[in-house]
Length: 590
Image (cartoon, rainbow, N blue to C red; front, side, top):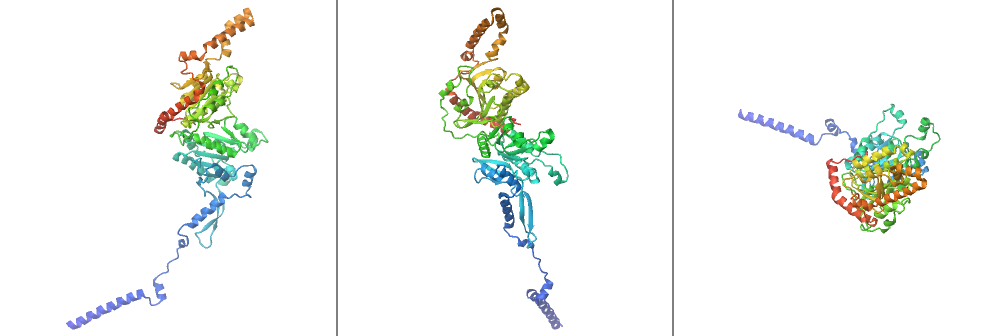
């Protein structure tokens, strides 16, 4: 019994082992290909495996788009029109404006693409044609300074809005705030403004948005430089964008600016046959203050943008940049002793005073063609940026009119927002008088100037070179407490100039003498009064009473201002910057 039981158990174990061996053998070596196929389904081919592992197909697409965008098409109607009008193509402008090899585009692939499908692979396609977004934007450098920029492409839909353009423009405005980098705007067209064709394209009409303009205002008030150039017809939103800038310049040969073009104007006001330049060329807007400066051509526009930026910090939380200077700060200028004529009726060249005092070659005037009773601009003394304000005795005898007040108001806000100290060369007989002065609201703009003097806080040093009379004079030299001011020996001051002042103060006496003794007697008495007043108005008498802090030799004006500026930059501006950072000081430009 035991033997038969053991034999049965051995047979069962041997059979199980044989069966298991057969299974393993069959798994490793199938009896036939068909049998293996029946048991193992074929793996489907993955189409993604056709795509290169290094993403060279995507990079090739981008390279194609960049090549198409950077290669002008002479047969394109817009490009041909651009060149025929004497204007640079947008990418030529970028190349001329920025330092070599500093351009890095943002949104380089944005635009409308026609794609061609690759029949060999369902996941592959290549660009067949490309119409770039009509605004080139990105990073660059101006004389080594990093900037952001936008440049309209008028050759594509005259710079009108498209989806990519609106998003790109808003993005760049926000980026300037986030990175605290200067923004340069080359305007040629509507700069993203609307077109009636958008209604047809979208199938509905929209309430006009002004996207990103709040960010622009924040840039202006935070002292992030906004510099604009008009390099063609700046229309609507394009006109607004460049006019809002801290500094703007227009190319004389191709620039114009207007709210709406000649066809719209003809339908609204019946003014027909107007050209771009008739409507809003340099003769219009460089003489009314809409645009600050005029340049002969696009290249000069670019040079002015570079120059202005060299005076400015990247934002209001920085001190303006100091540059190396070879003009000795202790330089004496004997020629200034004779620049003011002893005969009060004679004029002199106020710009000669400015260029003699500041570092040689550093004077940059702003707004020379408008508000010509005032002279404003930027310069350096000892390499340090300084704002300049002067009156112009060669225009309206230096009396400050409405436009002159607006010009100084804007400049004071400009200096305040960029932490640039101000030097004033003062020769002001008062506000302009007469019917023209009253019709142009001289007092209204004069009071606005007064509030600007007293609401800004940038350090001001006043050099009284000749006259200081009336409310206008008092506003200019009395807005800081304590004063930083000196007078030249040629200085004179009072409530009213003697011419007219004597007649007003002694009218009863002079009329009585004329009535009893005749006109000759009256003239003799007038001359006596004039001589008496002239003697009493000796500036040294005012210094005796400490009515003027100091009378200085004009020849030492430069060393005196250089010493003051050095202290301002070393001691005062760092404190001011900390106040700007902490938010306890908030200048307002716009």
